[in-house]
Length: 393
Image 1: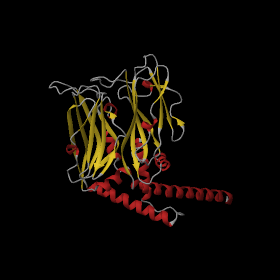
Image 2 (image 1 turned 90 degrees about the horizontal axis):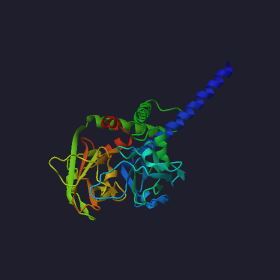
Image 3 (image 1 turned 135 degrees about the vertical axis):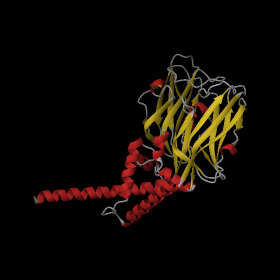
Image 4 (image 1 turned 180 degrees about the horizontal axis):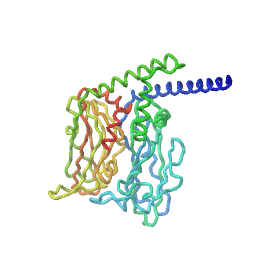
């Protein structure tokens, strides 16, 4: 009987020690996460006229993380065609091209061998959605290798990797830990939200025995901050807002700036952007219907905040890859906060179109009356808005 009690005491003590270490680590990671800023980012590489039956490596510099922050990749998209041409809408992935993708950050192959594009990317969206986000460090990169069969070296392929960047003090390994714990915002769907709910509920309980005074103070501070932010969210008023801009007759082999004043947040309150929509067409028609995005129009997208510019794409990117091919919608993995006065700036570039293509872009989101932009960014980082995601998707 005494031996059993000793064994149980050891188990209880070991469990308490593990729980204390987990609380300490979790509080540390969440405190660093809430002080970070998350915004959407994408990188794209392109290869033209890839050689038949020969492995072609895409430019690794184009698949490098140049954001200056940790990159969290959630999806990939592909465009493939015999050649870019006037008014060509995006098509399903080519059946004669295979892709092998390697993470140079960890020296790991993501695909064991070259994979045929139609069994890697969805036919309707041209998208490969990752079940678990893939993290690479600042200045990390990917290598992509293409193999074409039987088309006489005339196939063009564009590959895009998209997700979020996490700017702040968090390292790539710490972001990976947050994902593993189900605490990175938006990760693992409802399971991630449930993990966060249990965590924040545990933070409201008594502090674990055996934790240091420093950890105890950090836990109490995090508990107080989460409660404060939840209360601010509850008291705020949100209203749906859409901003739209356009450009007619984008010049062939030239650029045009879409009017950015129409995509500026002039409301006086922070704007929580959840999606962007894009429509490209040869010319407006009274009886025309929306089509899939054209592949010969590229866009450079950035956010201007005061004198600071944040790029959302590393280089001008094929517009047909920025949005889903089936819906013309780019659903952001995390809501993007535009402070009062911030604007989204878009430059459009057309290839081989004869200068007759029009581009329309809209931003959809919520104006959050009663909150500050910095507070709202904390809410995004801590996953306090993930309940909106389920309703949105």
